[in-house]
Image 1 (cartoon, rainbow, N blue to C red):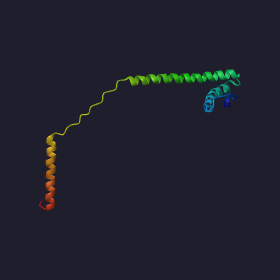
Image 2: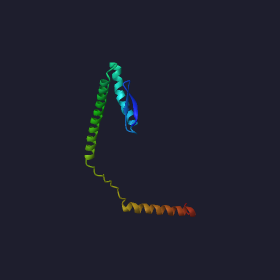
Image 3: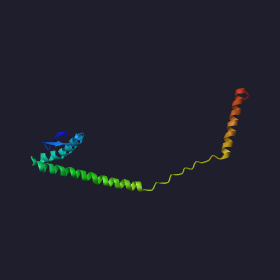
Image 4: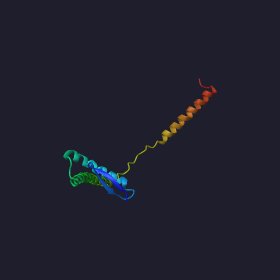
Length: 124
């Protein structure tokens, strides 16, 4: 079992952890230390137990606030997911009337005939 030296509030502690857990222990100690540093700066040297207790309580308060926010977000997500799915909007594509198609075909035929006459030189 690896032994690590961690520092919290300017004090060193020897702690053991499972192999491979060293990174997590260091991260947890850093979080606790970030709470202890302001306490030590404000109050000076505190008894070890009091410093650790106060730091732990401050960290627990932050964790509780995050859990509360997480609960609220989960409730909001559940509310959003419970909403009925809106029906898809149907798009009406206008159909081109047959007479328009016929007229366009007639215009195309006239244009082709005119182009043919131009090529033959019969247009004046």
